[in-house]
Length: 131
Image (cartoon, rainbow, N blue to C red; front, top):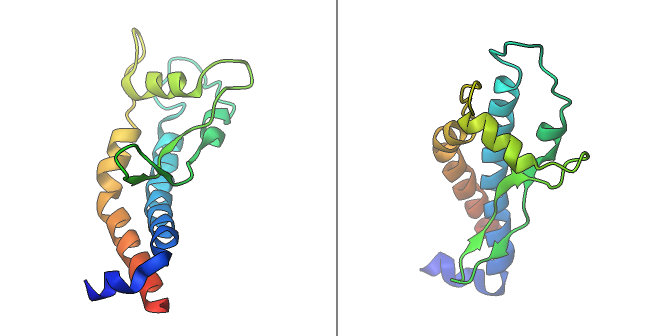
């Protein structure tokens, strides 16, 4: 409680830094997983242009209607050809008829959870230490 009371008017700034630190850890894992599944185990040579990987990013910190701060890992829209990056990512993640699933999001979420929490805690401690 004592440390929280020190935050005062810096709470929003610190919250943003903490969430971004955790988001960057998850983003790196998602990018790594996506790179490893694109073009793997295909019947035909991969036609990947790198557009999907390039559109992957981290949102800015926003507050939801319940007052919770959030940061999201996702894909920028739309694709250059007018398609949807989210649709393509969904097809890769879950597969479709004749194309097996190649999950990259769910494994990234579960495998980066502890590292994300540690990065957020470390950033919080650094920021509180500066006060």
